[in-house]
Each structure stands twice: as C-alpha cells, then as structure tokens.
Length: 186
Ligand SMILES: [Zn+2]
Image 1: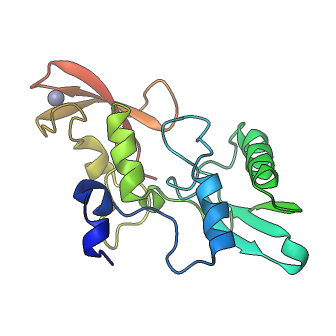
Image 2: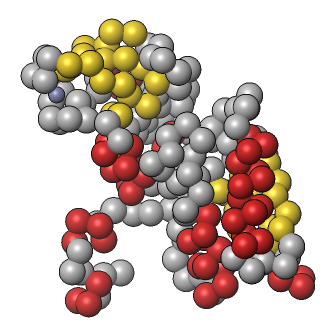
C-alpha cells in the first residue's frame, strides 16, 4: 500500500522486495538485517532478495529460527552463508539463532524479488526471465532470448548456455556490440 508520504521515491516503491508485510517490529528488524547479507556469488544482491531466506520466526525466549533454501544443492558457499546469517542475527541482538537449510521446496529463479532483479541488472547481468505459467524445468526459449542489461535491446543472441560460472549463460548484444551474461532461469 502506497501512502502519499511514501510515494516520494516512486521508482523504488514500485519494486517489490521479498520482506513480507505486516511483521512485528522485531521480525522486521531481523529481516532487514538479513537483507544486508550478500549472496556469495553476486554480492550486489542480498540473500533476502534472492529468495533464499524462506522462513524467519521468533520462538520461545526470543530464539530466532531461520530456514534457508539455497540456490544450488552443491553450493560450496552454503556453510559460509549459514555462518554469516547466524552472526548477523546475533549481532542484531538475537539471544540465540537456529539456522536450518532445506531443499524440500527447491529454489527457483522466480523467487528473486523485483528489487533483486533490478540489482542484478545494475550489476551488469541480465536477470533470469520469469518462467511462463505451466512451464516446468528450465525454460530454454526464455534462456535464449535475453534482454541486454546495458541498453535493454532484445536484439541479442546466446553464445553459450554456460558462462564463466554454472549459473550464468553468455550472450551478445547486436546494439552494444558487446557480450553480457544472464543469470540462468532455474
Ligand atoms: Zn545492449
């Protein structure tokens, strides 16, 4: 809901973040702390904007319980992420923190918030295209048609489905005459 006092920065208020509405002040503070924890691979985007933080609750005695759904099962940065999340919450005043990692509902790139997609673009990467309804698994057609993060042109072609890292594909923009990477839809 946008009130007149909040509409000063329209561009930002149009972007939907991944912090839920209607939180208690304590919970909101913890979410905001985690929104400062960077993703190990793209430090410009937080673990909250990536949709990795799937649950955050405060239990008995103020114990903070966090559930993380990592982007990759074999992510070597997983231990680092758990540790950083725990330390950030302890520093914010949580008396105790329990971090749980689950792959029960696999992460998909559709979990990335609008804010996060904008940050990925500012980082110089094309954000993953949203999957069309009913499309299960990688959307290969969407993967091949990436918009250039520099000029927005769709006059691009995919050079390789595998960029420098497993989760990125490599593209070429015919308007900028330069290559760019896309965060692959998953
Ligand atoms: Zn371009």
